[in-house]
Length: 336
Image (cartoon, rainbow, N blue to C red; front, top):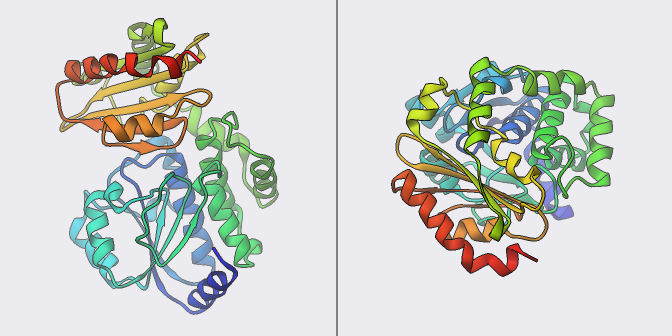
């Protein structure tokens, strides 16, 4: 954001507004952490604020302050649509294109509200009036902190906001392990802890509240892991029947795609999940192998250099076969 844009947003938020915060489908820790972190800040500024998600999200994120105020579009489409239509300001968090929020995106596009995008994904579409976008940032939650600081309101980050933003940063950095975890990231998290964020509580609530079924699903999935050492690649595929066997709940496979990367020599990992209407795909990599480009080119997806997602509308076996058949094309890059 330019200095002039910051002044304009300060002026925009200087009087009470009806504000809507939207984030991407299948919200993760960063999506909900940034959304609810911003929500709790805007409430302190006396705005009327609603958070709308395209669909549901894992129970291990439902401890975040403000969770009880979230409206799921899939459950209450008419209510959500009316709220979006009447909004003065719409914040778009943790996604780079309106198609990422599906039906919610159609409503946002039609809305006359001022739109503000805060995001860290590559190649953002220019649909917003104001944009704070930085692909170097570890998370959107970090950018929300930066946004609040740019507005001169850091003092308004209370314990509720701090817990949300800390959780978002912690999850999107895989516990501060990924390459975009910078010195600035640690400065921000230190300030969040000073503002009241409970780092041990965030870790316990997110990582130490697994159901027995989720742990057993993890063990089963790791037994199914296929290593393709000639390409430094690996994948895990789970059918709808297999997921049902373990009482699959949203969030149960969160982080599963990262496990193959812990195997020595593996640089590229994929996870294929057979959902009701599509095959949901997650990609992860180490080093300079760009899974964002891979996902965009072959699986209608995208994301970051080392973390991306995609989808396909074939059978599970066909999608896995397509993936394996693509690997020779990328062998030189994967063996570097």
